[in-house]
Image 1 (cartoon, rainbow, N blue to C red):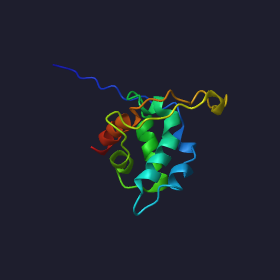
Image 2 (cartoon, one colour; image 1 turned 60 degrees about the horizontal axis):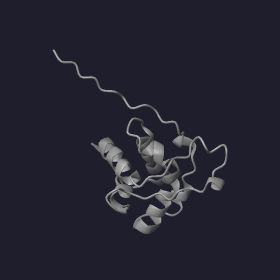
Image 3 (cartoon, rainbow, N blue to C red; image 1 turned 45 degrees about the horizontal axis):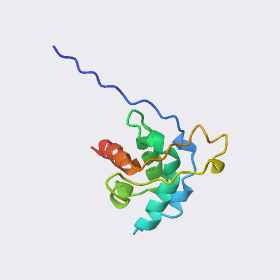
Image 4 (cartoon, rainbow, N blue to C red; image 1 turned 45 degrees about the vertical axis):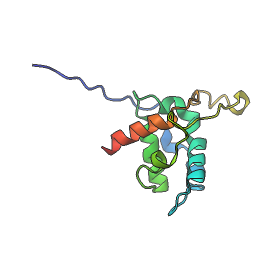
Length: 128
């Protein structure tokens, strides 16, 4: 007999439930969902959390997308299909140290260009 162990992903160190999603919902509006506005707003919101969103051992990406879709009522896969900057996903600009307050330091992430790639993977896993 063979036993297979499936490790459940850990929770998320960022509480996405209480974040302010208006940066996305105020700029990314249907029915057309303009890619430039939607992707720019998505990057503005998600890039500070790139580290935790790219970590596939937690539930941060799926949690964040759940709240984005809850507050914005977006079609499934909108950001994954519209927001592309290359084969490594969206490039997040580095945040200058002066722009990060002491309270935010624990939730700030090191930015990397594979944000969208990881987010797409997590989102597609949730869809299927």
